[in-house]
Image (tube, rainbow, N blue to C red):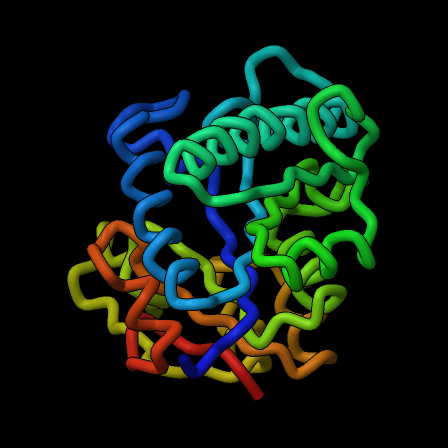
Length: 234
């Protein structure tokens, strides 16, 4: 494999499938089976999962405070993390769930050395609750965790087959980037990840590959170095 240790970023919305919210059990199982394929050939996989399918604090009708809303979103990532952990373990994959906020009844606290030790022992590690701080997205958390565990690459699994100049659903003339630099992505205002995440990746020379997680075997092909999706690097 081209990449040995990877950080897979999954959005909460991706888990909802065609629903507007909640968890689609078929999507959850599909993603778990795709993860199993790379795990079975020796990949070391860590996962950061979002919580937008459970709760998103922005533009909400209840006028919830931004900080309060962000903490609610962090708890949403825990729900998704527990669901993913259970599904992976049903496929006989050993996992550990680590949280950036203290919920020791359901998850270990995030400790860098412990996370790396789990990966060394062949366990999949699921990181929840973002960075544990409001105002930081799970994209930023994904980059931070990837740097800390010394991942080779960040794989952002989405429902789109890469990064486009515009939303391809709104503009049929939008074109797809095969590769793009961090600086170009920031200058063009591409929203596939936030600026903080891009900047962190740039400063640490950590490439990001954005690909369609819903296409069978795409994750496996990306790890093998095939040109799937869009790569963002220096």
